[in-house]
Length: 201
View 1 (cartoon, rainbow, N blue to C red):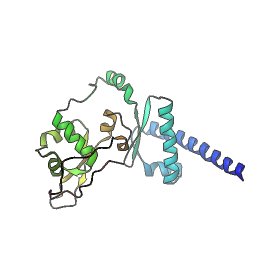
View 2 (cartoon, rainbow, N blue to C red):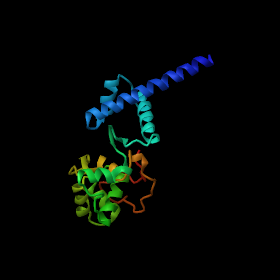
View 3 (cartoon, helix red, strand yellow):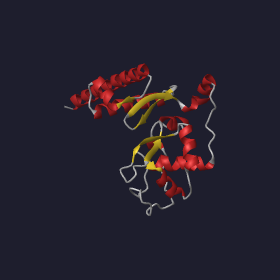
View 4 (cartoon, rainbow, N blue to C red):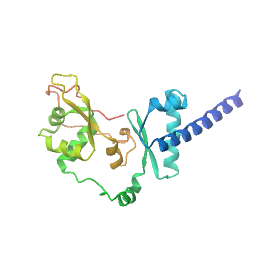
């Protein structure tokens, strides 16, 4: 009985490795983010099996100190360059190493990162100042994007961080953001859906 359990575990581990390799090939060939649903269909697996294979691939890339990383953003999955190699990639593409952001833009980016998705008014309720210019700068740098409309009067735009945001800050998912507490209350703002401190998952 014990041997059978060990055999089953070994079989699962081998299958996860094979699926992880297949995912790496698919993402490499696609050259774009793939949806989790696409991968489940291509690999003919369920979400639990996909998650196990992704975990194996992510660990392998990190432990072997490979030049690429697995980036997870919502339902999208893609391969990105390792953050420690950013200077080489920037030199090849003739790009500046980092975007030059003002302190206001960085503060706004922090608010969006930890409370996304949220509206411009919600951002301003947290910061206590007008955030039009800061938000526009983040949009222009591709660190923030419009992701939909809030289901309230006027249907204001909702903003969230982008895959480029994760890449610029050396993250593979929002779950890697350090935990923080937002000190400014936002209870009295009309289009704020909740006030609980939120760390993205």
